[in-house]
Amino acid sequence: MIPMSLPVASGVKPRRFTALVLAIVLLSAAYIAERAAYWTRNWNSFEAFASVTGPVSIKVGQAGFNLPAEYIAMRSQRMEAQTGEGNLKALKLSMTWPDLQPVQSGSTLARYGLNDQVLVVELEFNPGRESMRARLDPFYRRLARGGELSGPGGLKILRLSARGAAGRDLIAYDPEKPGGFIARCRRAGSGRDAICHRAIVMSSGLELRYRFNQDLLQDWRQIDSAIIEKIMTFRSG
Image 1: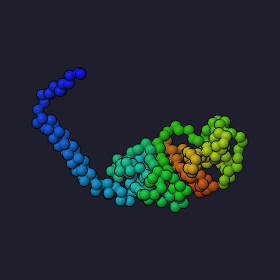
Image 2 (image 1 turned 180 degrees about the vertical axis):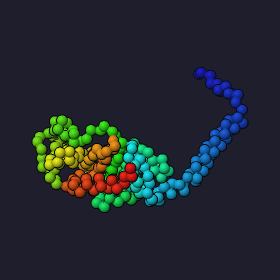
Image 3 (image 1 turned 90 degrees about the vertical axis):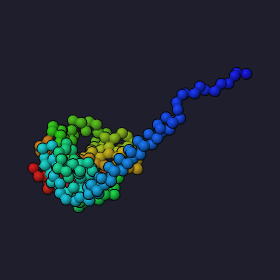
Image 4 (image 1 turned 45 degrees about the horizontal axis):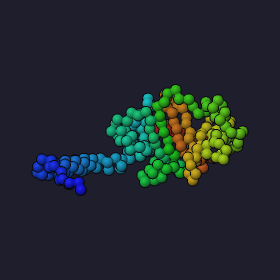
């Protein structure tokens, strides 16, 4: 039988171990107290942020905008605008269709969804960006499978998706007006709505993009003109 022996004592006094545990507990309590104090100090400002409905001024690149804060979809961007520090490369807005009013908190968009009553609008400073329409002939037509199809509201359709997924990826464009409406509509997965992406290159290096449910594609004329007009009412310089 192999003789058994007890482990050699470490020589550390029990009081030191107790003191170490106590120090860890005290540090943890101090951290919790500091976080609690931080949230207590800033809770009123967070509540004030959520309830602000007045106009704010913000710049996207060289373009200035003055608009109600509730149109701004991202909390961080809304806070920058409210503090007078809003000078951004991109700005995300949300609004309802067809009245183009701000999306209320707790709605579909607040949960990062999109339905046929919600539009997501983005403004980005991106000088030199090539328009989607400029890519129609040299790019999209070459990728298209089959010929043109007739689409809703007088649009023409090019199918980009593979066989068996004909409705997953398509280009919809206005054949009557050179440089006119064009959008790319894609379905991310089965059971999900197809979302259309429209991009418009504006002045001063500003690009206007908006997303909408493909079910609204038949109303493309009304949506396009209404979005552009709405954004122009926000312009301040």
